[in-house]
Length: 399
Image 1: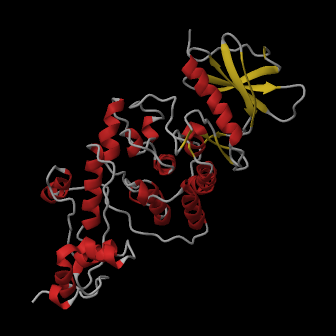
Image 2 (image 1 turned 90 degrees about the vertical axis):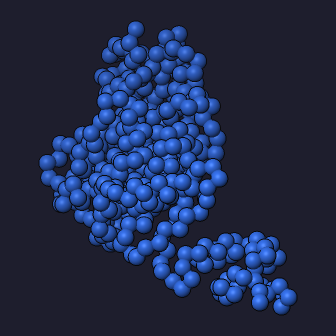
């Protein structure tokens, strides 16, 4: 028996008449549908009943999509099953997958227009489901349809889950989603936030404009590629792509989820590019060459009994930020969930005084600050009088 069911056109499932096939995926097939009491184009998604877990996942997709009543998300109406099949009925969305549309558009300028308009609408739809507390987890070209009038719809909510809850229908350690469009944290099995969807959306726009990245022979090889290899900025691969658009996509593809924009911010940034109101930063070089010794020194912070704070000093333009990013990539590959780093301007007192100032300013209580500084409070103030610490009594000040 095939995984996707073969349905006779003209037959009925419940009260719905099944029309021509619209498309099929790994476990389900979608057909046109009609109902005597309903107007407007309908579609019916049908799958074999094979296990209780799969049936629950299918019904959950219906329930989640019914809750998500948003522009850019098709409405669902009914769910049903018999001994062999399970199905639900939804709006039939006209259009074609975004990559097919962009692939069939020969003009680069026209493809850029599609990416800006459809990309902003896609990010708006993602922002809507994120506000409801959901993560899509499977943003890929076949799940983003663009109509002839330019309306964009986000499909397939079978892998959606609530951010604050674990996915009780997914086994621990099992990857769910489409590997080629997963975020690095999704590939490595780390906890996900809504920023994972932003990364996937960025990859979708990237490949739609400059073509697909080389696919590894085996799925497990994606792990090293997603964690260690930075994609070549679009404006380097295709000089005709505006640097402002390339900058937005680069930000969406940031390794650190905290450095990515939210979906709402990404939508606003894409609209700003369309309206010529976005900054155009120079793209980062795609390859990390050399600096192996410095990289190993930074990575030593994750070894037992080693320092957890490392300060990288250098003049502007010497590659401090890129060194930190590559350290983050290597840490993620080895299972370290979060590496934080900030590039700071050269000021009097250097990076140390900036870090100490931020540390002490996390609490307004002077007693807490003194306790945190310990016996060194007087020494610290003698070195950096601007630190937000109360002046100790004269007996405690150093000679």
